[in-house]
Length: 299
Image (tube, rainbow, N blue to C red; front, side, top):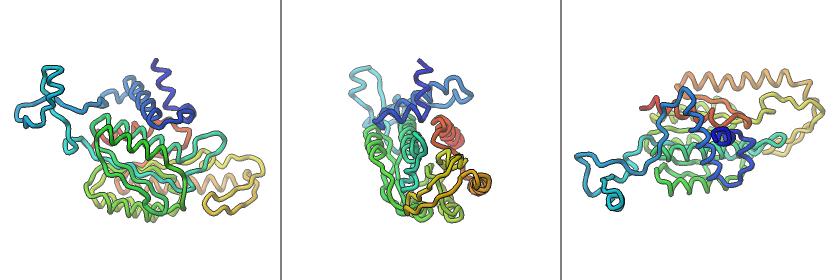
């Protein structure tokens, strides 16, 4: 059973599931199954909408329906009692629509990861919100902590489509201004633009006392440029085309890409921002474990 559940941590398997809620549930169930055999088995991942009555609790918050069924007193959990407020910020620009071969696109991977994170957060009684952006902030759903709200988030993620030019720096500044209460911000993006502007926006979140995790998602070919034969490349945002022999420029491309990624990694470290490098073949438990590790450090 564990093996069949763990398969849903594999993006190639998950891409065959059309329903985002099913994706999120199966990814999280596979993740939790894996936690029981890992060094992180002590993480709290149980879901509850109520907690037992404690002396001093207001009687008006007792759930009398549960009392009638169980003869025990339980208090309804309200949003101010949640453990953590998190906002997932997802890049939906045209560049995120890229995929090589039969792999998930970066946006499909990012949306699936966002769905799994949201599902896990609600399961832990955390409040979660969602912001989507390209060169502008296109939508913002503030954090809440109910299962009904989770469905709203998952429908939004089910419907995302790549559109608009990349403009993370500007959009992230706008998102930081909209978040009135501090919490955990998880940014999922390919970040294929000048790191200086993006880092400035990430510092804006930190200035407002938020904890930040950056999850940079790339396609494997964007990291390696291992196309091999003659190829025609088209810019997904401008439709500009260029013909080249990939093997001739592969070494210089890889060097430039490594330097580009190292800049993000170093700058994030310097500003106390967690940085996770992912590609669309990375099992989902890598990012989920990073989230849980950060969550543990916040308590």
